[in-house]
Each structure stands twice: as C-alpha cells, then as structure tokens.
Image (cartoon, rainbow, N blue to C red; front, side, top):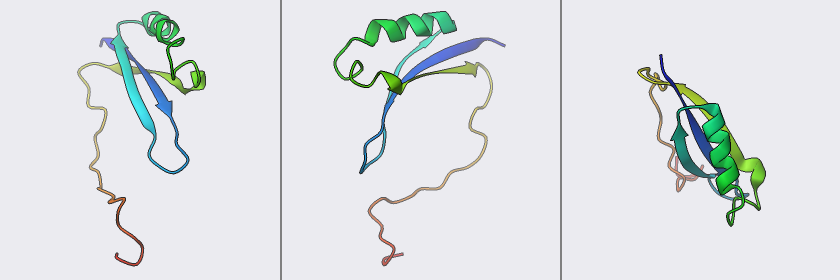
Length: 80
C-alpha cells in the first residue's frame, strides 16, 4: 500500500467550531514537514504554530467506515 501524508492546520475558537485547513497532501513525511516550514511563517500560521498536524493515510482503503449523525447547532435543548 502507498502512504500519503496530509498536512492540516487547526485553530480552535472558544465559541464555535474549529477552523480546519488542509494545507496539502504529500508523498513523504519529510515533504509534509518541509511544507509546514514553508507556510509556517505566513500570517495566521505563525501566530498559531501549534495548530499543525501531519496525518498518514493509506491509499486504497476506507478510512471512515461507520455512519454519521447530523447535529443541528441551531437546535436548543428546549426545542428537542
């Protein structure tokens, strides 16, 4: 199996969903780290350097094998 490496940046907000950006997909962990170095000095990224994450993924495999539920953020406990 071929492995690819995804470089993500996540910024958590106090009162809202996380802001997640996929920076890119690379053919090696080294290439992903080099990309992190290239973008790390850009506005926003340099303020939150702890937000970077590199994830390894095998190609040709299902990575989400279960269903999902939809959570309506506008629903209130009273209205449910």
